[in-house]
Every structure is written in C-alpha cells, then in structure tokens.
Amino acid sequence: MHSLSIKFLNKNDIYQDIVLNSSTTSVIGKNASGKTTFLKKLALPSKDIKLIFDNTDLNALSLSKRSLLLSWLPHCEKPSFNFKVMDFILLGRYPIHKGIPTLKDYQIAEIYLEHLGVKELKDRDILSLSKGEYQKINIVRVLICQTSLVILDEPFSNLDISSIATLVNLLKSEAQDKDRMIISSFHDVNIANVFSTDSFISLTKGKINFHTSISSSILESIYDIKLREIEGFYSIF
Amino acid sequence: MKILKLLITVLVLLIGVVISLSIGTTPDLLSYSWDKIYVVIFDIRLLQVVAGIVVGLTLGTSGLLTQGMFRNALASPDILGVSSASVLGVVICYILGFYSSLVSFGFSFIFATLLSLFLSFLARYSFYSLLLIGISLSLLCSSISSLLVSSFIFQNKNIYSLLYWLYGDIIINSWKDILVLFIPTVICFYCGFILSGKLDVLSLGEDSSTTLGINIKRFKIKLIFVISTMISISVAIAGGLSFIALIAPHITRLMWGPNHKRLFIISGINGASLVVYADILHKLLVNSYKNVQLGIITSFLGACFFLFILISQLKHSSVN
Image (cartoon, rainbow over all chains, first blue to last red; front, side, top):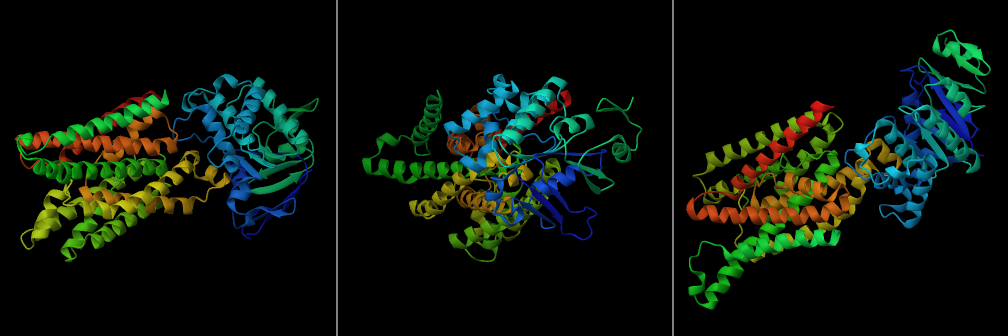
C-alpha cells in the first residue's frame, strides 16, 4: 500500500494539504473547476507543491528517476507525427528502455493491448484512429511503464460503456493486484464511485476537499444540482 | 525490404556523384593529358561534389532536428529565418573587415543561435504564428544582407564576392576549406543522432515528455546549439541555400515513417542527393545561361514543393 501526501507551498493557493492512502482515488468537480490544473500540478515537477510518495520527495528527484515512479495521461493530446500504434505505445516505456525497446517491452505492450481487446490496432497509424480507439491506446501507453503512481486525466472521455466497463476493471486490478496508486478524474460520478470506494477529491471554485465517501448531499454541493440516489447510483432525473 | 530501400537511397546519391563528376565547364576533357584530367576531376569537380554532400547532409539533418523540435513538418531552419540570420552574420563580419573564415563562422553561428533562441521562446504559441514570424524574420535578415552588400559592394573585392554567395552557391576553393569544417560536422552528426532519439518522445508534447524524464529546457538548448552549428557549416560553404532543409526531411518522412533516429541518417543522405542533383542541373544551365546560382534552382524547385505541401494540407484541414 502506498501513501501520497500533497502539500501546497504557495500561500496564495486556496488548495489545502491532503494525504492519500487508498490505491484508487477519484477526482470530481464541475467543468472548469480546476481538475486538469490540479492533476497537472501533481504530474509535472513544480516548486509550489511538495509531493511525498512513500517517504520520497518526488519533486526533489531528477526527472529520469521521477519518471520511473510517476506516469501521467494528459487530456486530449495527439502526437505531432504519425507513428505506428506499437511504436507510439512503446514511447510510454521510454524511462526504462531509453529509446531502444527490448523484447520485454513489446511483450508487456502486447499484454495490455490484449486486456483492452485492441490488439488488432497495433500496426495501424496512430493519427488514423478514432477518438475512442486513440484514448484506449493512450491509456495503454501510460500503463505500460508500470510506475507506482499513475495520474489519469479523464481517461474515459470518448469511450463507450463496454470499453469503460473493461477499463474500470483493468485499472482496479492494476491498483489492487500490482500495488499501484491511481488518481483519476471523471465526469461521471457513478463511474467515480465504482472506481474508488473510500477516497475522493472534489474541486469546487478552486477549493479542494477530501472525502472518504460520497453522498447525495456532498454531490449536490459540488455540482449545484438536485440528485436522487437509486440503489447506490446517482441520477439527475 | 528496409535494407533494399536504404541501398536505393545510397545508390541514388552515388549515381548523382558520378554524373556530377562527368559534367563540367571544361569541353572535351578526355583530349587533355592525364595530369590535367586529374586536376579537373579531383581538385575542381570532386571538391565541388564533396562540398555539396557536406552541405546537403547538414541541411537535411538540421531540418529534421528543427521539425522535431517545433513538432511540425513545415518547420525548417531556412523558412524560420535561421539560415538568413546566419548569412547576415557573415555579411556583417565581412563589412567590419574580418575576412578570416573562423571569425565569419563564429559570427554566423552567433546570429543563428540568437534567432533560434528567440523562436524557441515563441514555440509555446500557435505554430502558424511562429511560422509567419519566422518568415518575416527571414525576409528581414535577407533584405538587410542584400542592402549591406549592395551598399558596400564597390569598396571591397571581398564583399563583391559575397554577391553570388548571398543567394546560395557552392563557393569553395581548396580541400583545406572542407577539412577545416570536417571536425565540427562530425561532432554535430554524433550529437544530432543522439538527440534525435528523444525527438520521438517530444512529439507527445512538452508536458508528457517531462513526465517521461526529459528536461525540455536543456534538451532544446542542446538542439539549438547543434542546429545552429550545422546551419553555420552549410552557410560557410554554400550561403543561403534554401528549401533543402525543408524538403529532405519531409520526403524522407513520407517514405520511412516518423522514427527520428532512422530519419536522421536518411534525411542526411537525401539532403546530400538533393544538393548533388540540383548542382547537376545548375551545371547544365550554367553552360547556356551564365550567372545562374545554385540557390535559384533550389528556391524554384523548393518553393513549388512547399506550395504543394501547403495546398494539400489546406484540402486536408477543410475536410476536418
């Protein structure tokens, strides 16, 4: 089990310090509430934040050491050149293979492609993929580095419900069986509630709050909307 | 399959070299004595071809590094104005009265580096604004160069010689001049090849590359250093030879895919082929039309190709 403590050093920040212990954490909040900004602050080295991950100060590490501990899925970013899907995925293991992928890197990539059922995409051109296909490939790229800390920004955007079901299971088993800590932002509170059971971060007007569980009243204060709870699921209708 | 493709690429260059060696301004070469033939082939034609290959290699590879750095296949040191800045450096150096090749190399390197540093600060904004700023800077630098050369032209024979070189022409007098540039060329190739591996990662975006362990600032400064040195080498030999640095990597990427390490080597070979064949065309034209510079030929063909790329991208963007 890993632990991550987030300390905001910049006094002007309205963020408050947080300690995460759960293997899966969901980040929720309205559009423009600062989810992407917050996750980017964690993912990129920054002077106004102190990240202690299992007694290691992440921002004091060199970039190459840091890259072996933390990986990040940015929101909607396409590569500028038309790589083959396999070459693109292997870029995710750059911190390990440093530009010369070995057979092991290929094997790990194949395993994840198999898990997501997108093995047939591996010889396609990356820019010819649909948005959903690209999103899956991009998630594989981030997962194959097998870092202990994974930060995902809206991993399920553009995905259909069956892909989401596969991915939620994959991410949860990654977190539990392989002992990785995954922090992910979601649009859909129900998916967030399935993904993590005891660790939620909510962002409202730039304010950050930590919850061990979510309820209708918490969600109503986050989203400013009436919600109904039906057998553990939340509905606006 | 890949080996065959590589062999063809090298063969194209070699055939170009052979053709280039057999064409020249001396009529009926075979009727002369062996000594004379040796001098013409070895000291004039081969020197010209080797100079062309060095220019093509540096332009092709520096073009690839620039495209990788700006993450766009339309970037190139000549379109963004790095070459023109480098040319301006040499012109200013001559006007100040330093005619040593080392000093002028230093001047052209400093000007090229300053311009690329300036551009890299703008790189976070939209690429098309950057492209327009680059094109304006390129025109600004070359107009200042022309202005300076034409106003000082009658004061000094050395400056008069710049007139041809300004628009790009391989002007090289002895093997010594090539050998001086040999060491920086080799160092640049080595460094450029090492750096090109990271360009694949950079194409994921600057933030993603940071999380994959690349120090973007340091990486870009290294790239700018290598690109500026390469451009200064090519400018020292051939002046403002334009469009080779754009076309060579572009064609190579179409044929070989986007893997930058592979592209680095093959862009260099293709750049060399382009210069060698442009030089053959140049020699054929010079026989009938005097005063045609090599740069005019590469500009003409290159501009047509650039237009073609831009128009085909236009179609592509209107569909989306």
